[in-house]
Image (cartoon, rainbow, N blue to C red):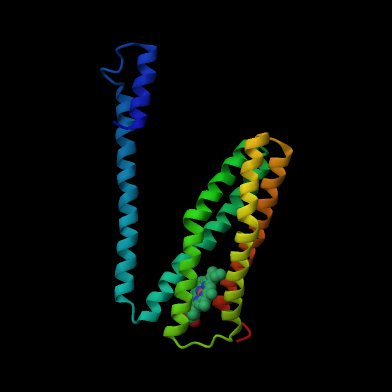
Length: 212
Ligand code: HEM
């Protein structure tokens, strides 16, 4: 039995003992719809994986497969970061410290579980392409890709990560709404904006390949 259904039964029995025996059809329907939605999300994930395998399989050569993985990972990383930045700007405008903090916590989760692994996939497949295609490491777009990666890596290591720890400590000590906590959060979001701007410039540079 799902948590949702258990919660509904507990709620109903609190109002009317014995109500859990025959559940409200609307609750039953919501439960079924939720289960169908979860299954459809799984189908979307499987369709994506299958599509990547088929496209990779049918690619003209290994270089294109590497490029496919490199670009898909870059889209997840840079696109995800860019959207999170816009969301943070909109949330900041709403002026609710709790909602902003909640977004900050989600951003931390996304950074560690999705963006950092995706960034390493981008780097790895970038290097593999360079070797596979015997490309010149001295080209401007390659150097700026490496510099962009190093910049974002160091920003994460030296600023974002320790500041996130500090932010969590401030939230635990003073609470989410305290000016010190909110100032630390806003500082973090500001630096993250510059980080995303650098990454978008790397994408622009890597596609236009100027000065090469
Ligand atoms: C900040 C990290 C990076 C991002 C966001 C990024 C993004 C991209 C994108 C969007 C493309 C497609 C452009 C095209 O095919 O014309 C691309 C291609 C490529 N990237 Fe990156 N990249 C990054 C880092 C790197 C690094 C560090 C390397 C090398 C070590 C690299 C090597 C390549 C190569 C070889 C191509 C294929 C170019 C071609 O086919 O002409 N990338 N990258």
